[in-house]
Image (cartoon, rainbow, N blue to C red; front, side):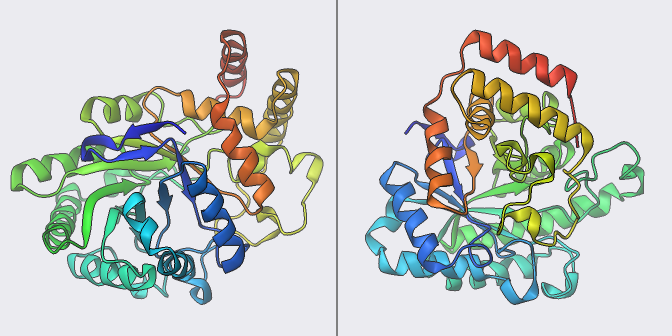
Length: 350
């Protein structure tokens, strides 16, 4: 396993971050324990979760994933100090989480305490804002016109950010969290948080996790360039495009128990004719080079300049092993050129 520094935090994290959002929905406690044991034994020290999980979000499973991780940590207390544990506070819009209200300073403090209790730990290494209070171009809303940025009151948004940072500072000072990060945010969001941190001597955001994969490269080049020069760790989530880049959904297939057989809050927006065409070519290219489609997609993501750690997820041990093996793959110049040509033909399939 290779390791990278988590932005300006100084923490060293594995190039593979174990995502956990299926635990409590598609995976039970025993299966999660097996995944954690295997990942840690193979050098993974970076675990990502959220108060929202499991996915798809439901009131009945709110907090379930953190609880599962907490049970494992309680039985593996000696491993806690070697792990970088990340979780997230949910943004607005879900009625069963703080009545769907925006993130506030009060919400941050309460949510941190609740996550610590579920996780059965004294501190969170990386505490992230799952999505902004303002409208944002994520979760399928990235096409021109989907979000009207001029509708956002930037001064009001900045005021909310300042309140959030002040609450995060309270949690840092109390030893409850070590570092802070963003998720599903933009270049403006990064810049505003950094500006406020400097102006008011508040915690600095050290990372951001956004969706990024062979089918969804909207953060390249502008946001990723900013991450490099501002020392912000870039953490791609959904590097397999919700599983579609494994090829398992080609020709209308819906394997039993897979994510696309479960109702999704935003629908199957990744299911399109162009995605089918792109994945068919990616799978063929991977097989020509002795790889699975998933391994090619993960290996490509790992080698992108600016990527710190890629957040993977698995619902079976076979998937986890295949995914981890992908990070031992080195793309040849020839294969890299062929992938670039694919990206030019399918620049943003969803």
